[in-house]
Amino acid sequence: MVSHDAWLQSDLVKELKVLAYALWDKGWGERNAGNISVRLNPQQMAEWGVAEMASTQWYDLPKPVPALAGQHMLMTASGAFMRHVKENPEQDLGLVRFSEDGSQFTPIAGYAGGGRPSSEMITHLLVHAERQDKGQSVIVHTHADWLLLMSHLHDQSSEAFTKTLWRMCSESLMFFPDGVGVVPWMLPGSLAIGEASGELAQTHRLILWAYHGVLAAGDSLDDAFGLIETAEKAAMIYCQGKMAGMDLPGISDAQIVSLGKHLGVTPIYELNGQ
Image (cartoon, rainbow, N blue to C red; front, side):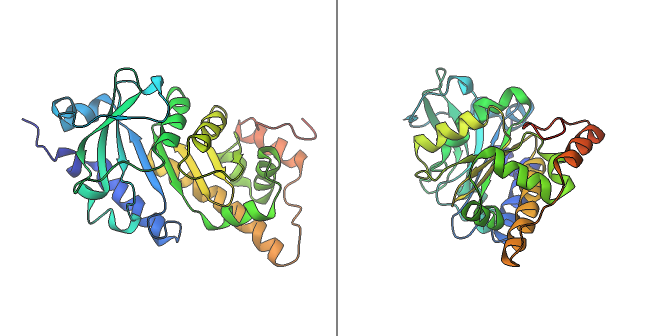
């Protein structure tokens, strides 16, 4: 018989606790900022006895997400402090089941004390729906300082923002040749920001919410976190150049094209010299 708290003792939850603390330690997870979700695979469901976990109260989603119908997800709780997840996982994390038509959800474990999944759940779901066929099962949202600042200083079009990050350091093109999708400021937790993010997720793994934070889709927690770190480093270089009164020219279009050929990646946006 599977232990009722097998999920809490799993390697995935251990990794998530480390990541949540790292988000706070970097200054990206002030107070209750940020949220994390992971779609469960069949092995995790079997090892944790998910099928035997009873549905509790069902809640309507703001919008049905048929692509996730009948699936299960691990997600941080609404109001969870990232620095506390490692100490209170049974309160700050939980498992969620989605109805067979994808219009409702029910908590099935965790969220002790009457908690609920993240208030930005609908955004996570709409991004998961677009990325699941591309091999990504993890979504991380956090308030990365330099990317947030760059959204104040830079043209917010996805193409212009992406090209600047590509120019700041060679690793940018290596890790996000599919660019950064930029969402103009929208009400946090709203269906509107979820739909805008889902649309951009069709082509981008990294999504920047102007004046708010960044969201990344990955095939693991480390993958999503590393993607944010890479973009954050490039944004830091851009912003520090601005602070020094300089517009850094960075890597030229021709050099980016050459780098893409060397790495075997194709930039999502056209560059001079292609």
